[in-house]
Length: 245
Image (cartoon, rainbow, N blue to C red; front, side, top):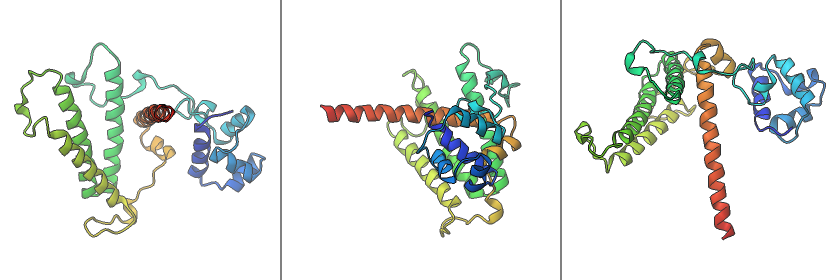
């Protein structure tokens, strides 16, 4: 059985529970070396072992194989995704379901992000992450605004010829600053987070703390990484074509 998600997921489940490879290998009646190979994707296991692992961790086989992000195996449907602002008429779409679905995934994921920031209680980290997100929205809105060349540009103070360079730079700076703030290394220009601010996170804990919104975040992660994989494949094919020529 060749599955790229299985090694990552079984390692995640083991670490979430704080189990050692030695304990899990003994419980599953295999050698520690073989379990290590499974978790690293060096060896492929049979379907019977997938079923055994699913029973051991009390999750579905579909979850272990990356076919669903719900541990019980439930498939996420659009009507199952909570809408945090469904009473706002401006946010009710008609026609295609794609804008509705993506809006829910993004907004619900942001609920988790900002609640985590609220728990961390770092003004500088909140500022940098907020700046990054606001800049991303600004960039995408300007692309939409350019759908029609007749749309008045007076809404913006930065010209359409230079805004992309400035906004890309601002995004990069915000991302770098946020990374520096959460770093274990003390940097003079940033506050150092104390031990209480370094809150523990895992899929299990996120699902427990945010039962309504966690599926949206997990699907956003899966969709984004899927697109990254597609881009990578396209880039590889271009490189291959160039070498062939």
